[in-house]
Length: 229
Image 1 (cartoon, rainbow, N blue to C red):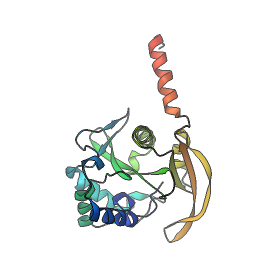
Image 2 (cartoon, rainbow, N blue to C red):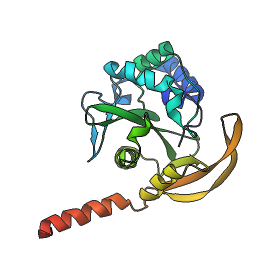
Image 3 (cartoon, one colour):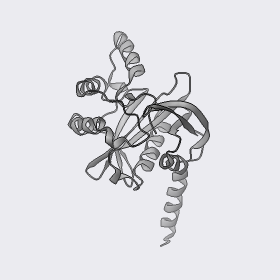
Image 4 (cartoon, rainbow, N blue to C red):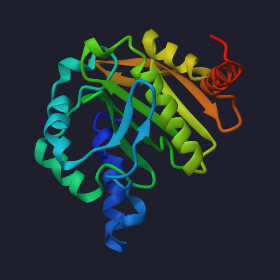
């Protein structure tokens, strides 16, 4: 799972041009920003929280440590001054893209983000990263995807949500399948990383598609109401 350019998490080149153009017309107002001290998406395993200024040192270290990215996440990095400037401009949150930190207990274990992949598609794409191998296998990313899908479906009009997964990334394919995403096909040679072009798999979830985790929650709630043990 990855964003379309290496620095998308921090507002990559295309996003920077859009923001620069908009800033000449109007500064982003409060309506563009997530209330950083108020909105937290809470699951059973993780919480998704906006990036606060106090989080920037840990976030920056994680961004610059390309050893934690594995075989499938882009290797590009931004400097600390650029990270801080973009945080001051938007807090990594506006109408068309945003980043949330994945917390487990009192530890930042990764991040998840959304952005518009193509301007004329009625869609958002999701990207995510865990910052250490020890955080894998606990369901953190799966729940983070579910929480963000529910949030976007409730607050944004986009009909589609995409996961674009490098060929061979079986862990992310399992996440997509657990979250009800449908494989639409292979996009050949679309992702350049690690010195070569790679195929990617395009998964989508429509607003009208079922959310498997909702069915499980309803089943558990029903069993609790009946007193099933």
